[in-house]
Length: 215
Image (cartoon, rainbow, N blue to C red; front, side):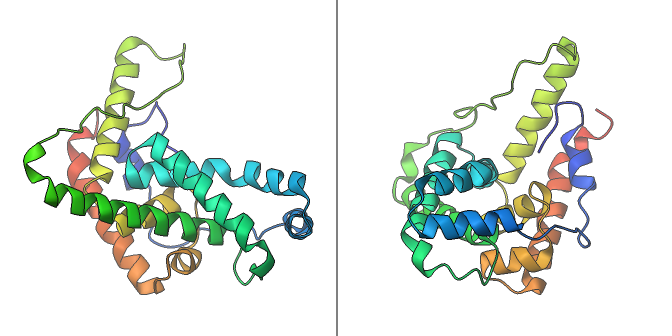
């Protein structure tokens, strides 16, 4: 997640191309899944509670809209509920959820791109239409808070320059810390393609945010 105390470019500069570690799904989650398959709504609700925020974060990064991200997360869990009987656990639940939401987001972005082509002369400027919502923090002074808000705004703006798949790869790598292999599984890509998307995403963001260094 982006913090209010560090320039956005520092976050981009900290992204490695290889080498995250991540624990496997624990036994508790396997038990919850099994109980949910058997019709236990409380167990399913606990799974939703466990994974809802990372999914919203991914959707927000990919689409730039908090409301849309929440809708995509809700649709993802609806699809999970319908698929519980056929979910075999070949991949982790998190991977399945990321894959489903990523595909929903990419489909949405493609439809929106088509709409923009059709309604080219509308000329709407979306900048600022979905402002960053930051919790009040009494710690930093006005200048620091303004700088932090600007860094976050610039990072979100720069993310919109990426392709949907680059956005998904960057978000899963940076925000969720997934290893490249798991990202590849989630997005249905080869590891080589994931590495290429990550490299291009990081280079694009560094170029876009370079003037924030030392801010």
